[in-house]
Image (cartoon, rainbow, N blue to C red; front, side):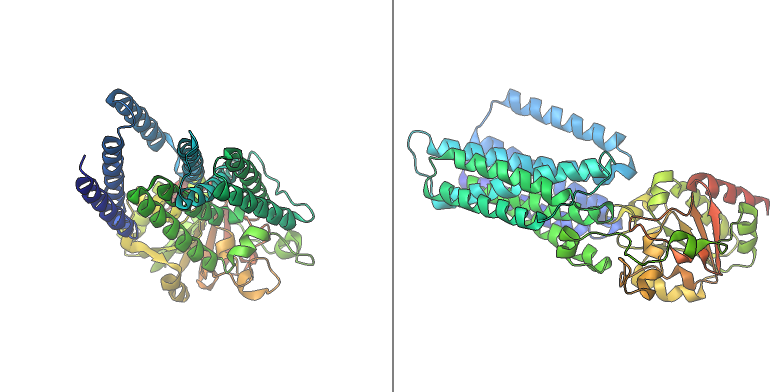
Length: 461
């Protein structure tokens, strides 16, 4: 295939990637953006396979069919609550592929006494380091999200150990650059970086896992970009750079939403501080439980209702019942909106996707900065399975682990109804005074069942 034609195809693919990312910035255009990005990737893969003449068409077609089948099965069967785990695996596979491709390129370049250029050796060492950290870090993130391992690993001097491992990787990287024939030095980088990836993610708690997944996504892009330099493949450099940059931007947005620095996420922990009030001190004698019938009566005089969804809504799959209740209230002339916190759920946009799945119009989904000033004019705020993102302690207690974290100001509504199984704490592990506030009613139960009961009570009323 002529080089000019290949470069034109790569340019078209790069443009499709950029328009795809732009489409993903808005829920209404997200599906189209996803299709554009996938089309660009398919074009890049087909052109590369024709150009490099790596395999026969039988193997290429077989690989495409098997890959498409696996992707289709995963897309159809995966639960919405398990999307973060799937993203973690995708990140890991990307990092692992970069390690293997870069290693194979180094072996090929040095076979027969060849001396590869510095661009190839530097990029190979970089790909091995970042790719191995991404692969093993993503696997740890996956098993933590699956609750296979619940404890966070901490030991004295862990940051010193991590620094030593990183410096060792740099040392072996210098060997790869100065003496590429010593290919074992590359695999030493991979082995040490693998341990580093494990040790970096094991100490991180579940509350910070969305940020870690976003960061690992960025790492997988950077590893792919480095592998692009190894192969001198322009489209891989562009695609990897776009993924790396977008992942870093998203990580930064999430850190701001949690009022934490990236270093604090990676090296710090989230948990109750000494001297903080216990659950008994916060809740004892102050919590008021309610029923579906009582909540339905609240709606009789309500003119404005705001839902604040959280991970509990995703677990109970109650978004469709939320939609049914919304339709009932709007039929009565009640204004209904949805307050979406940037880190509600376990990944950015988690709540947006769930609500869109229930055919709730996008214009009803309001971001935190837009909806917070409106809570003072809200008659009923309904919290469905959210916890830390509505905890007023973030505003009132500077010693709290979530101090300064922007939250949804649901406590400023005239009445707050919290749908929750129990008074158990959220990811931060601290009690929530909102549950014991004078204007709060606790509707205990499974989210889906509670909302179905509420819909029935509203219909009967």
